[in-house]
Image 1 (cartoon, rainbow, N blue to C red):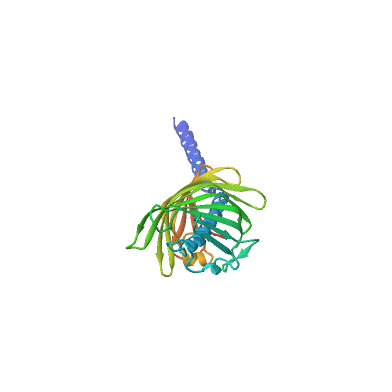
Image 2 (image 1 turned 45 degrees about the horizontal axis):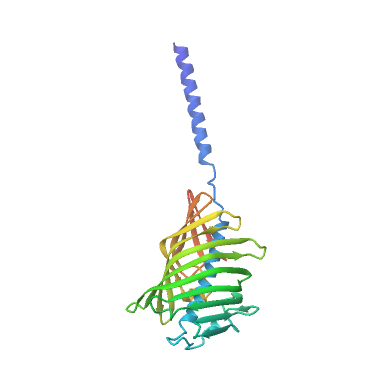
Length: 276
């Protein structure tokens, strides 16, 4: 009996060592980092969108109630851009020609046409944007973008816009592309020194690899005009959830600094990246 008991204790001791060794081995297993390429593509799409909003708002704010331009602020968009307003047909044609470069280094080419029902500051106004051979830094943009004025707050000098993008596509020079659709609420606060936009809503589409993705803003994203004009075309604060290939990630844009650094959190890890 004594001999059998000793053998059992030795077996139990060895089994415990084996179990502990297995646990140590598991704890050393590196955390699987999700593929972040879809997020990087989504960030490029976002930068294109914010750039578009920048010059669209600049132009719309320059149109008086009578539908005519009150001033000519377009040199800061890019030198040589042509803006034609047809107040009778309520259309605006923005022609970047064969290419012009903004003060912050953004190269745009092609045309954008904007059709509006009335001055965008009036509730109920609808602004529809179409693209004709339009490119930003070599990326081709197609789709239809619609802004609808849902409310205006004269006390706080802000406009609430419902913004959708249908059949959006961004194509790279190698002919790979991202598709995207967005459904957002953008609260635009207008001030003497520029605008500030608070963004909530969702987006979905397919990556350049053909895999579906979706996103949802969980803490309002904030975009500031002075940051956009300096070349920072991403939000300065806010959080967005991003789902791709079975991973759910959180993209944190920071606490308001005008920079290109974001923090990506995923199950078991985080990664800080700088947006190009």
